[in-house]
Amino acid sequence: MTGGAEDPADVAARLTSRRVSRSLSAHGGSGPAEVTLDGVGTVVVKRGSDPRSARAEAAGLRWLARAGAVRLPEVRGADDDWLVVDRVETAAATPEAAEEFGRGLAALHAAGAPAFGAPPPGGPADAWIGRAPMANRTGQSWPRWYAEYRVLPYLRDAVDQGALSTGDAAVVERVCDRLPELAGPDRPPARLHGDLWNGNVLWGADGHVRLIDPAAHGGHRETDLAMLRLFGCPHLERVLDAYDRADPLDDGWRGRVALHQLFPLLVHTVLFGGGYAAQAVAAARSALRG
Image (tube, rainbow, N blue to C red):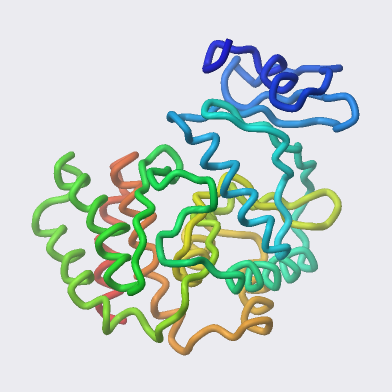
């Protein structure tokens, strides 16, 4: 039996070929479950929200880990429906861990990608960011790629849903028209986590940060940094300072934060509506001011 009806303990045993010694159901019977495997320890068994999303997440975790720059939970097994990864024991964030994270994130981005929009090896081109579809179509010009494959698809969806007016959409479209002049210096494609909000940054009990739930692809390094700021991150300035010391950021990067936040804000507008639409338009106006 595969798919959503399968018990997480059975999934863990099937995908890892290990015996289950303990299983804890997720709260309310949904969401990730914890399972203890002989010879491995405690793992998290997570059901994908969409077809092949679990396999896409596994490919992203492995691709990011291959850079040897930041820590990620080890992937123990995956199929189209399920993902099994090591459990991360968490603790309070520390300045030391934040600085290590900043240096590691700089090295991760520097590991690069074949193109903007390039999916992880083995990952599907039709991927996801959270519960929203995300097309990993490739391009060599970041401004053109960002407009065509990151901003405009979600803008169209937001207008179709009635979350954004045509007048508000015109503000975002002006950003897309001016992207070549707003984007800053040309940069090669970076290896992005792609969904780097605070909830996907786990502060490990061993003093090291681990990243989870990536929407990994080739992109602009400032996008990951902008998302960290959008939803808050402990010791963020220490993270950014350590990053900048390891691989200096381009002049004016702080003035481009709103430009890079436009994509996740539009994703949230499509998924949740509400105040995210106003935030997206505000980010677009800020980006136009530079």
